[in-house]
Amino acid sequence: MSDPGARQAARAIDALRRGWPFRVEGNGGALDLLAVESARDDALAEFASHDLLLSGERAVTLKLTNQRIAATPGPVRLAKAADTVTAALAIADPALDLANPLKGPFRTIATGDDAAAAAAMTMARHAGLLPAFFVREATGEAETICTAADVAALLDPTRLEVAARARLPVEASEAAEIVAFRSPEEASDHVALVIGKRDGSPPVVRLHSECLTGDVLGSLKCDCGPQLHAALHAMADAPWGVLLYLRQEGRGIGLVNKLRAYALQDQGYDTVDANLRLGFPVEARDFAIAGRMLELLNIPRIRLMTNNPEKVAQLEKEGVEVVERLPLALPTNKYNEQYLATKRDRTGHQL
Image (cartoon, rainbow, N blue to C red; front, side):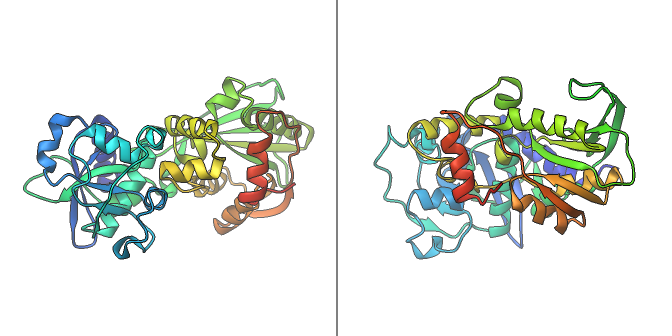
């Protein structure tokens, strides 16, 4: 069933993508916001203060956290930082850092409402945009309004339900069924591919986050495509298995931002530092979605195929019993060996 608050958040995210102003209400305060990436200069008249709201991660890159008011982790507001979209992008987009090496000096001020600011950063990530906004205190009427609680409601995985299912023979196994999951206000549908015949044993399960470049185009920069196909064949060799295909491209930052991270990697940054320079967390995926999918499939116990212990911890937090972790080892190539070393050394992946 559709939720009024989630609908409001969905409308606000649509406004964010389209370059329209919107309002987020937090804990006693409210902010009017305009996404830097989708803004046009003619819309800035309403944001005459020219303040910018940036994520805490981007603030660290810009060395803003030595200012007292920005020392606490979280979004940071810059006073009178940019009077045009071009000037704001030079601050917000790390791809432009080399072309604009001298930035500031900046003066940080209180966000106006920390809960609203944090919700805005979540919305930007969900929309696949840079986490940067023109910002002002709420003034007058607003056409599009949501609350921080509305954003949480929109992203609540318990709203996910089974939308459709069908038999789907695949190369790894002709005995396969695909199950699609959807929540009412969300545009992205997650899917599960059930391989083999269900029995009383815990299935082999793989959580696979969408990777257009690796899964479809055969990118050599990651190991996603080979991992996907190796997992399907391992499930076909087991009594049964389930692939959960999560629509969380680029570790949850979206396709465009993932490509921006690739460009930063070409400048010498590793995967972790590229995400942080963009203004995003190192890990932005929501594995509670996978827990909900397994609940709807009535699968309480699993053998999890992963090199990431954090996936084990997150699923167990959602009430899924992981009876065994199955490592997935594949050959490296000259394009992805540094990427895989970073996952091992900086994000705790292990075989």
